[in-house]
Length: 128
Image (cartoon, rainbow, N blue to C red; front, side, top):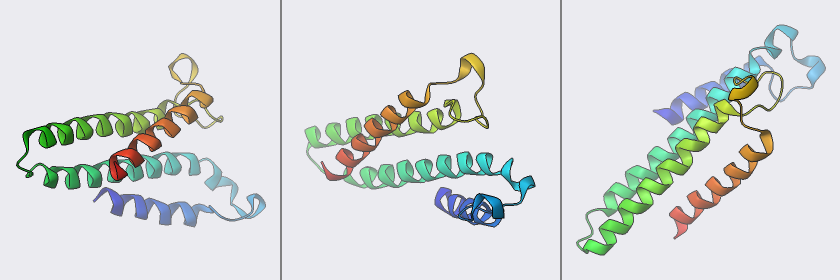
């Protein structure tokens, strides 16, 4: 369901003018675009974590106790890492249209480094 919402928001984003030259985007749409981008990113990450978790739950049927414990650890770590990425989408202070203002925002470079860490953790959980 989260993937359907994300794809729908992608269509809204394109209708607002994403992909066009900046001069071809209607001025009234420029203020709406960041919110749609933040929502789209959040739902993309949410659909990612839900699909990985649902697959990992199927692995819990493996009869070896140590394997089930390992799968539970991977589920917990992966969910924490990706859901923190969702939180950082809303707390980043990148650009003037950022949802977080003043003392409540996280510096942009810290967010980028955390997203790289989270992506590598997600890749490891998929391939590991």
